[in-house]
Amino acid sequence: MSSQYNENGILKGQKNRINLLAVIVTILLAILIVRLFYLQIVEGGYYYKLAKDNATRVIYLTAPRGDILSKSGKIFVDNESSFNIAVILSRVKKKKTEFKFLAGLMHKNYRKILQKVKKEEFLPPYEPIILIRNISIKELSKFEVNKLFLKGFFIAKIPIRHYPFGKMGAQIFGYVGPVSSTELKEKKYGYLNSSDIIGETGLEYYYQKYLHGKDGEKRIVVNSKGEPIGNIVVKKPVMGANLYTTLDFSLQKLAYKLMKKREGAVIAVNPKNGKILAMVSTPSFNPFYFSEGISRKHWDSIINNDEHPLQNKGIQNALAPGSTFKAVASLAALSLHLITPEEKIYSGPTFKLGNAVFYNWNPNQNSKVNLYRAIAESVDTYFYSIGVRIGIDQLADYAHRLGLGEKTGIDLPDENPGFIPTKRLVYKRYHSRWYKGSTLSAIIGQSYDLVSPIQLLMAYSAIANGGNLYRPFLLQKIVSWNGKILKEMKPKFVRRINIKQKYLNAVKKGLCGVVSKNYGTAINARIKGIKFCGKTGTAQIISKTYSIYDIKYIPRKYRDNAWFVGFAPLNDPKIAVVVLDMHARFLGANAAVIAKKIVEKYLEQKGLWKPPLHKKNEKGKKGGKNKSKLPSFIYTSF
Image 1 (cartoon, rainbow, N blue to C red):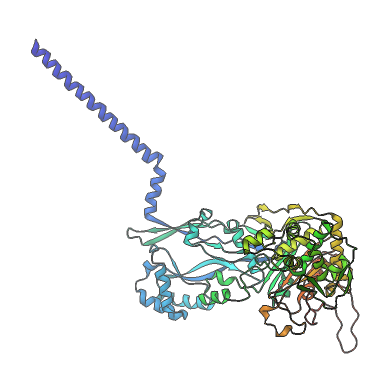
Image 2 (image 1 turned 90 degrees about the vertical axis):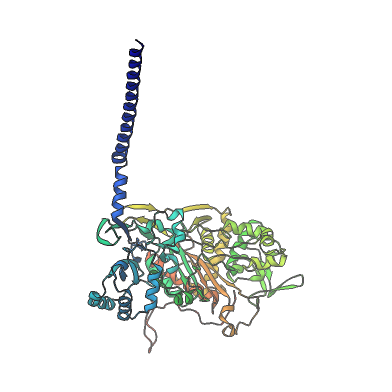
């Protein structure tokens, strides 16, 4: 009985073990089935891609950048195809022989070609290396004739930037260059790859994401050794969006023509909304050389140029504004009830403060003048008399109301905020105490006063339009390759300047006298039938007094900077212009004539002004229009 019991127990134990084993096997099979389902169904796409990538390699196809155009659609910057000699190293059998042959054929330095190859040796063997960029048609023909001897070498057609008008507006439009390894690590450039080019300055930089477009892809099929055996284009590149600017093409062209041989800047704006109508900075540079890869020698010649061609002097230069600052001083004095417009104040050739003597620019000045004449004739000693009654902090308050000493917010990089002094700021920045004599210098736009042309222009625009400060802007709209409007810029009102209208009107009357009155400092800027108002300015580079007759003996770098800023017409301003003529020979009057020509052109285009008709000149001379000529009188300072 007991033996039967034992036998049953043994059979039962074996059965339990078999059942347990079956459960374990079932569980393992279930896990295997689930895992296979996960790998083949859920993650099948991923592993398919992984297997595919083991047999293919991706090369990115650079998308053409969007164009930059005027408001009417005239092209400032677009693209053109460049022919470049490239090589796939894995296909070159006799490297030394073939590289030497190529160098001789193209009249290039063999060692430099080898250096380019060594720089790119870390790349996979299927990836092309650009050896010679932007070859000529003649060089292209040479290559095609000899390509049988250059296995592994080919012509790569790549879009590069094209500048139909060369140097004109180069600092505004900007230039492009290859993306650096550091930039690729930045979050904002996450959409780029190593072969891309990016905007380095100007609009190219500011609107980089819109201009860039979407790169295409080409898959290279490789064998087990990683050698290319075929290729498939899987995604075509999509061109970047086009930027339509607010710039008036003919005005831009004229501004550059007038400033081409000078150092400085010209900006024109619609004073009622902040739209930039023209902007040039000179001397300029040809941005094309950056597109094709600038040489070290050429780069050094640009950055070592004393006139700083890469700098956008319209927004990045902060300089003493000279007598153009007297409009700010006038508004401050009126608002603080220190003067009335009609009140006459004695203004002589000098003004004494303690033992210090401050000079008027005109040594023959010796009369009582009111505000209107003081602005029109730019009487320094009139403003010195105001300076002893006004504190620098009060003066700074009114400068800031007009937007001076702060960035305007224009859609360009690296804007200079300038500097408007207060007692605290001067001590903090220069570790210097403020003296009353410094206020006398500051009130005529010298001392620590620093403003950029764009700041000065927007301040005068606020005076012209009745007290509204606007943000200047260059972008009109962004349009995709298929015509869809992606972004449209609208005027941005910043603030009211909080100055009474009657005081603005008084200052505007004085500014009109600068041009219209016979004693005004810009009589050469008169426009028949148009009330053109503005202010000349002269800012010293060094603290030195010199004769009005010896300008030609002064080294150019020590000559004063000339300013003119103005607007027209008086009652319904359509345009405001600032001209900075650095180290000028004829100073403010010269700058005023440049501004006049720009205003004439714009108002004529708008049908608001017509050039006056003139009779034929007397015998022996040809007739024609009486075009404004730049003055040729001796040096004066105002």
